[in-house]
Length: 392
Ligand SMILES: Cc1cc2nc3c(=O)[nH]c(=O)nc-3n(C[C@H](O)[C@H](O)[C@H](O)COP(=O)(O)O)c2cc1C
Ligand SMILES: O=C(O)C(=O)c1ccccc1
View 1: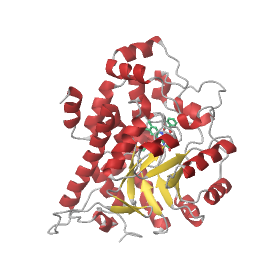
View 2: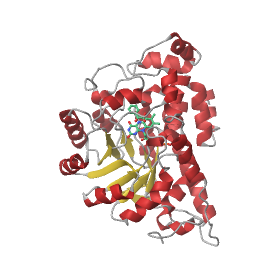
View 3: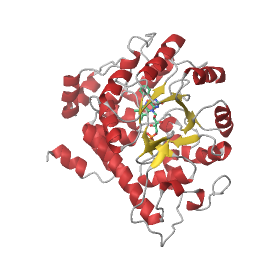
View 4: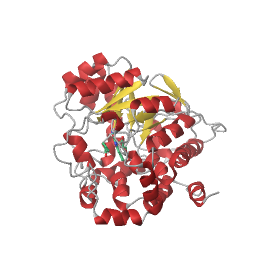
């Protein structure tokens, strides 16, 4: 076993994978992934909202073979997990999108490709046979947005998740301090940072600068944004509204998800328009600092929707038991963002596989120890002190 393989095998938790990633990546890249907006209140709140929930265990139940198989968007999934869309992943590991997608496919869970991926819609569809969803950022140019939607349909993606919480790039102060911008402006500090992380630097030199393959030529160049998020934000349409969502619903024939929902009234209105699934998220604390934690928004949305649409949740999932808590709070599945990317940053496809394996392993154990033989039977009563309106 190589040293890198040994390190991966020795990683017991997502926190361990994060530590390996932190050692391997230049500071600017690690902090771009790890960081949140402003004071990182929402980033920390996401974790706290999962951590503070407590499970009231049941005993004397046969849990010899706990089943975490479930149904997501009308198709089977091996576990209640989905990979969240992440742009610029190749900064962490060459072709990290492909690495994570292959790991997801092997684990039998859906993978969401970002509009800002460094692997094109078509290349991903050719490379991976598993369940693929496409995340849409609404570009300022209507025709360019329409083209992305058409390409995802033509390439056979089963679902479209339109992200609605990046009306502008969040104020990511770590990125501003580190000067990680788009296009990259290399300073002496960046070169030094690279030299201090030679395995990463050599990989990058060999692979070349990652490109946003889906939006090649589409990002306007009115000034390089001060951060990646700011530059991308400048190119998205902040005027996009309910009427536009209705048009998108008409144009896209398959499953439609809205990512970045937090208010029950928004959720209700989306369901009435025929949106198939609500993706409760605050973008991993990277957008509005001060936004409610996802795990707190989740039960209110579940009550508002009352089973008329599916619900996913992300932001702060770092342990398998978080998926059990999320199921109890009303989600069908949790999406994994940084946890998967820390894995890929630590060791490419094997690292992403390790991340999923850690989370599913922890969930299986949590199911046994809580007396949960079947993930689909989880209700709100599993949690201490949760009002059970809309639950069981
Ligand atoms: C490096 C990085 C890039 C991201 N890029 C996108 C993106 O392109 N589109 C999107 O909808 N969300 C994006 N997100 C947000 C994730 O989809 C997800 O909502 C978030 O990471 C969940 O929080 P977690 O990382 O705590 O699991 C990104 C997150 C990270 C960490
Ligand atoms: O950083 C993000 O959260 C994000 O959404 C993004 C968008 C485009 C490129 C890279 C990241």
